[in-house]
Length: 222
Ligand code: MD6
Ligand code: FE
Image 1 (cartoon, rainbow, N blue to C red):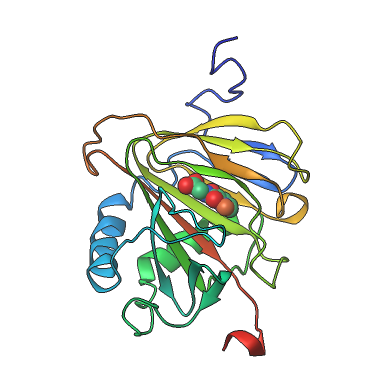
Image 2 (image 1 turned 180 degrees about the horizontal axis):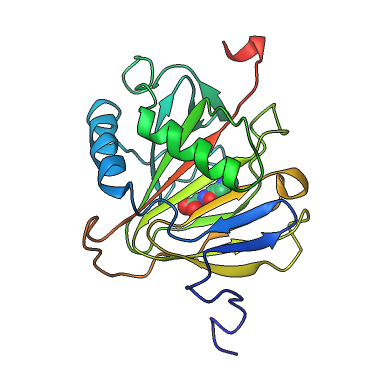
């Protein structure tokens, strides 16, 4: 079977349901792309993209940074949210208004009005970089959705069920696509297949993914 036989979505569909609670908004971020990239450059100048260690002792192929009140951190102690960048000891860069506004507009469009992101995880994929199947479960507030913005080279996104063993569907994510997921899909397993090489007009040989999250309060994390 061809790799893309089970890609259910033609690329001209503006709005597609991936699963209950999960919506793909095609090209939703295209209009704002130059503004988003300019803000992104400011963030990574302050908090550079870096390859974090997993708790299992591997180095992630994806390079990460964060902005917002909390940032996502991985090291030998585990995955968690932290108010400071461990590399600099400084608070994470503020979330730019253009980020917050895009995330809120996308969440509203997908049926999650009132989304107020506290953290934006920035993932950079070079050709070959991948993200193994995982659940996003480091957040305490699972009532809020996650808003995920794809920029640059296309990727094949794997979207599975609530069990790791559920066979994932594959969806091609292009520059400007936004996935919003929550509710019954909030803990679905998902991942990104190794990025194919290519050249994108704005971003060159890479893909950037922004995921906006609501983390929830925890005394242990403040
Ligand atoms: C990526 N995304 O698209 C990785 N997580 O590069 C994620 O891991 C992700 O897209 C939660 C919700 C949406 C996502
Ligand atoms: Fe994820």
